[in-house]
Image (tube, rainbow, N blue to C red; front, side):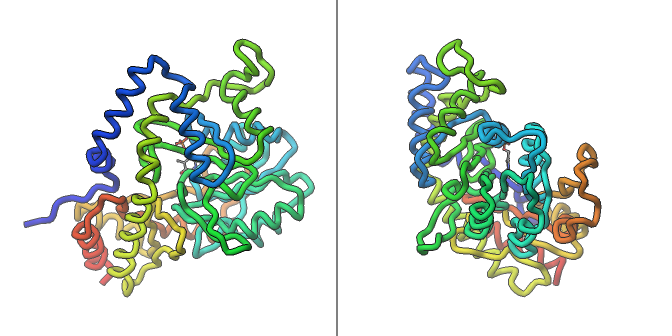
Length: 373
Ligand SMILES: *Cc1c(COP(=O)(O)O)cnc(C)c1O
């Protein structure tokens, strides 16, 4: 008898488990008669900001919009540079380009896959305005080091925390501080497959800066200061709707539990794959494993093998930003980011979600082992 296939992701399991809570939230919004920017959005903004440990949240339509609006609120533009990583798909780099700023791509640390502070230092110029770290795969970038560089040079820090809801590292006083509570501004996505996901699109910018919140509230709604009064150029329609906010309020109550389940499954993989000739993710106490990413010199063959065994896997991400066809003019050539480029050819994401069973993790690990020996 052959084993059941294992999907790379399975959101239905998660929603089936909390179906009655979600139904109640949907019914409440339906009955309220108010569907855009109302009580649910306001409550979720405060609850999520509290969870992150910051003062304010501004709900927007997506993670991509959160990034674009955060940059717009900082008044960056042509002639400015922002330092970021090239291994996080194009999300944040595209937002930087949309504001007219030049993205300066630097290499990543080969064990954490996050921005490498010495590489940031080496890329600073008089035009640098901000640093934009991505907390890739659910692990925080080295924020104490990044914030120290930013402070020394008077730069803003924008966290792309779309993969890191609830992730943390300790601050100088040895207190855990979550993703979102480190930067000038931090951007989250609630795309369905994120650690905290809606049943559609959604995003949020969080910050402690009241003036930036004021601007973000205008920018997400046509640049209006009050109804029909436009006080900002560059506003758009990017609102989080009541229905998604109500659903996200339900799901936020489960986030800690789901993140703990992700960590438990990551520990199972580590236990079962420890002697395999692979690079396993470097664990850290506050890592929330949005993805479980291994690295292998024979990645493409391993991927084919797992696919043939009925195991879903994926590559996050196959093409670094500077090698994307539309971005050949970023001024960063092939070979310029050796760690980033090497990793792109070696990384492979295995199934990892809170509802995955021990038997399924064992099945995935066994399939990996029949390939690697
Ligand atoms: C998903 C993601 C985004 C984009 O979020 P959307 O809500 O899909 O627009 C941005 N950055 C990172 C790192 C992401 O993983």
